Length: 201
Image (spheres, one colour):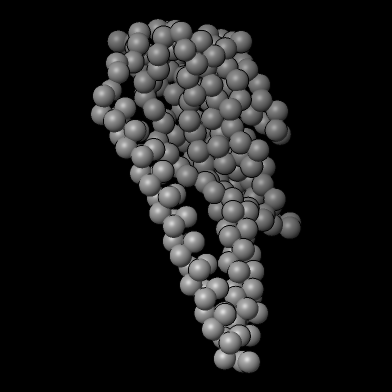
């Protein structure tokens, strides 16, 4: 009886774990505002879908506004994604932009292949979604913008380096502790099973 209950519990834990992993995860993270000269740079734009089961059409438009001292800022349409077709538009970024979004269109990012000093400025990500509910269509739109600064090189951050080392050490320790706990629990359950069988006979 104890062994059968344990088998049911293990099956339940496995099912919950698989269902949890199969759920789509969307984390709306703020974009990084610094780029390195000559390196690729991802321009992050995340728009989480709240109703994944509803049929959705998504259009994404990227705009760029260069840094100028003039009060009038020219907004340049540099990239669009319509009907699952990315298009690199003519202009200062022609041939240097690639689609870097996800298949489920929650991450709508693009990437600059080779950053130049002229790429510094304001970027806008316009997302238009159309949700189809039978004969009814509902539209939502968002605009996300950020300012990108281009630097010659990124200074080494000692704090980030040490924090990364500590993270790996902690990960190894937690893995080892989890293995010890699993062995301990397995031995304890095996011993209780043996005692239960002895009492039955």
